[in-house]
Structures are given as structure tokens and as C-alpha cells.
Length: 97
Figure (cartoon, rainbow, N blue to C red):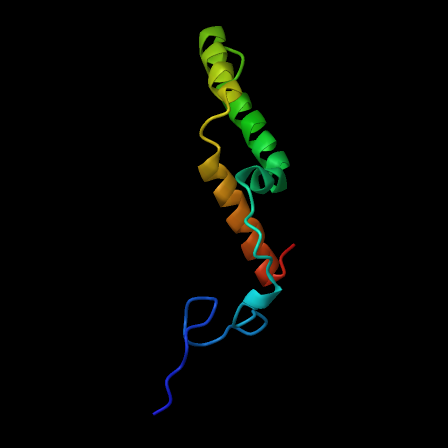
């Protein structure tokens, strides 16, 4: 009985049009810094911040002041950046871009 090897899309059957493996030889061995990763999704993160600020709104000055303080602090960027990076990689794999 022949066994199937797992594919890049997580199953044992390839989805038509999706590569069934990664060519690791084509990737650089140089580590990528987090700042370089953030550069890729900088526009997405800026749009996210603007959208969050618009949700908070200017109707409550105290709440808006607190929100501006939080958004300008610069923390809590890793998780949204990872979501944007994974979505871009997935879209590229599926040819959705």
C-alpha cells in the first residue's frame, strides 16, 4: 500500500494549482530582522490604526486621548503584523493577489 506524504496545504492530497512543497534551496540563509518584516506590512498596520481610531471616534475626548496614547506607544504590533504577513503569504500561494 502506497502512503501519501503531507502537502504544503496540510493534507495528503494536493489541491490543484497549489504547490505541493517548498523549495527551501531558493530561500536565503540570512535571518530576516523583525523590522524588515514590519516594513512589508507597515501600510496595513497604519490602516488598522486609523480604522481603530475612527471606531473610537472623537465624540469622547477622554477616550480619544487614551486611545491616541495607546496607538502612539508602538507596542502590541507583533500579532497584527503576523496576521497580515500570513494573509499575504496565503494570498500569494493561492494566487489571489
